[in-house]
Length: 115
Length: 113
Image 1 (cartoon, one colour):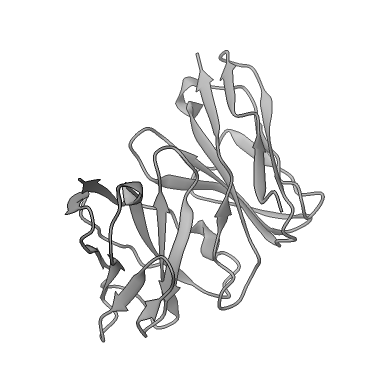
Image 2 (cartoon, chains in turn cyan, blue):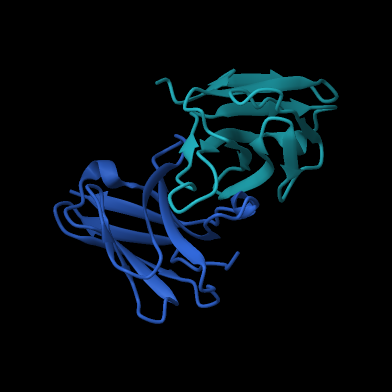
């Protein structure tokens, strides 16, 4: 299994541009998550999904959108990029509800700079 | 989800046990304690989790106090590769919104030769 994959690894955006961060998992996990990590800080949840067609906001959803049309993919859309969105973005997945379900598997991250 | 408190940094000598504390005094009865670590700029890696009994796996041991208000992650023989940020998180298993809990700032463990 490839686990959780993210593309691109690095990206530089100009203010006002838009882009989509891709995330895919091949573990048949129901739950998927997007986090951002600012320098020297912990991870903050942006959006999450408990299954195809179902998404919900996390702690810091403003400026982002998500969709979940398939179990495998969970893209994150940035509209009108702002310098405050400069961060490292991590995608994660977990099997679902249950005793051992919240073992999350993380992707390698996308480093985004908005200038 | 209950909040956690961890020391910002700790040092450990290579080959010695690393004991990382976590305070979760407001934990509720159905919340589990999870530990993750993040090496350099990689994605976080799951280590271990538990409810009220002590747990051990190939990576570490988790000791949870009887009142469940605190826990300690133990790396029995720390190596230089264990240098990382360690996160302690409490979550309700089986709750679809449990993933909303934010990773705090964690403890930066530095293993020294």
